[in-house]
Length: 397
Image (cartoon, rainbow, N blue to C red; front, side, top):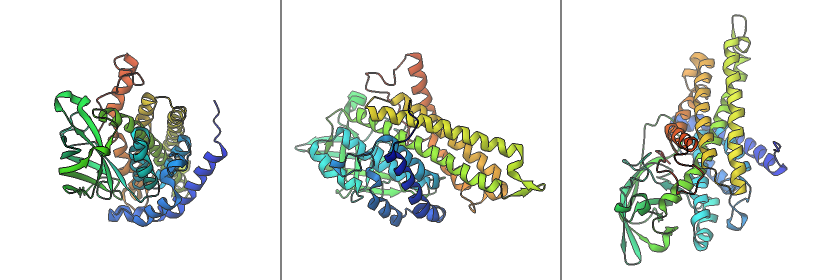
């Protein structure tokens, strides 16, 4: 095994770190306070082409591999989880899904515009009654000539209110269960389509999260992604990519906690010495560092398999579970190290603590990841087997 990064991977990591420190970090705290999606930052991200990192150059992307993409995502989340959400949705859930399942015409039309930010995508899978039970889709798509009429509701959809295009999963035959689910690319300007932002979130306050409403939205049949009945397989393959970027982002959050805690611990004086000299503080920082290193290796293993084109549901689930839990441990310990200051938003660790919680909820809860991993170990349902996948997906997108 080669643990060294290529010059291209290292350069992307360095470039993203400098960009994040210069453009994202200075405004992260204020955007969180104001619950503001920052279009100025987004436009700078679009201009750099970051959203097309793993998309081939022929479709307007940077043509880099998944290791570079993981490192880039980690660096973004090191300073702001809300900004990382844009990458997870636009790149992982939408662009890479279209790259795998779209027709050549769809890819040529959609991917360059997703990479440069002219189009903003969202992933419409979760419903009020379909979170972890993703196959329980209530949204209906009825064939009408050369079109489909879609009616239903989606919720907890990241980027839902700012999206120009939505991947909408709907059932064309509820009697077929998950085999009746079909995916459509829906223009959000279509008549009958509306979105409502969800306010009062615990974390990710500077990202957009919305409910989507489709009231007899007419969608041309050529906007179908994949074939009739392939929607569930499409959703599960998309979640493999989404969980990967969440895992990488979680490692970035842990690294952010380490950066702030090590600096603070050598500045804050108690009992005549920096708190970094107290063994209890050292123990918490030591745990963060160990978690960070282990989590990074886990998501890089998944990236390696993605680069090889090998199915990686199991490895991605393991990375997502571990890294999400590690981020929550790091956020908790970071607030503890900062003490009273950690309880206010004077320092970023309070934001990290809140943002960490969603990492073991969306893109498949920690409980769902444990089921996937355990069922593979028990031989009940091979995670990387030939079956279509598990019907267990997880709330939020």
